[in-house]
Length: 357
Ligand code: 13P
Ligand code: SF4
Image (cartoon, rainbow, N blue to C red; front, side):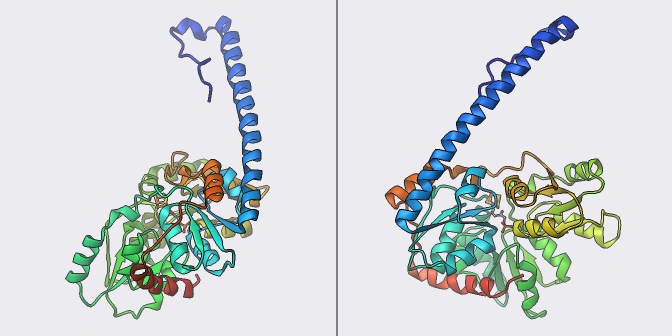
């Protein structure tokens, strides 16, 4: 963005009326520069998007994109959804090539559920702070301390961790999976502490141990920020992702009737479904801001407000149209998961896919 026309006022005199005209001109200048740049970017994206769609047709590829992807990626994808939806689509597609626009564990999951297909990751360095919060060594040590426990892993984990797990879950079906496990069975839940404590609160399971991992984006959304937005938009429904630090606090407070009753803890797909059927016309959305594009696009006439505009996942934004074009052109980088790991991880993932929320 060209911001060079802007300067900080050097003295209080500059805010007097005579200077306001100058300030106004500067403002107009910035606005028209921004508009020109937006138009230029729009044209470039439209051209790139056409190239990507042409290459996808030539390669007989399906493009899957997570709800946190940048708008221009969402707009050219064949399917946009949450982690569960992406895994379901990756498994059921008969396209020989799958392009996964999301972070790397999503591409690995696509390869594990459909090993016969070529899975492409436009940027394999797109990681996830939550997946990084537990190592294989950590998990093996934890298991040795609880030899009778079953391991329930959130989908935001590496293939190696999934291979060491009994069940895999997403935010879309975690509660249903945990409820499907006999009540007297000890559980090790990893890696997200907030989703874990929300599940514990919801299911009342005392025999569930929780790993203290977190996603830096969701953990950064503070209850005070959420409360401030709720006060500003008093009639809004509040949609909270269970990875947020504030999710379990909201459930706890809800149970005691002191929190706004229009609070819903949902996966990203759950948010889209809820907003399209709710009678509310305004929604405060506590998750990564990429979801707002899909909400605005699919649900017209309603207002969506980010609980925290800074909740942006840099890993998700590493995927660009240029990278998608290159990956389709070169049919690389491909995603490979060694068979001994993939075969074990598939058992946990199949259990996840068997339990739809
Ligand atoms: P869902 O889209 O499955 O709700 O997950 C959010 C997320 O953080 C994925 O990285
Ligand atoms: Fe991982 Fe958090 Fe980014 Fe989701 S938002 S991909 S959990 S770092």
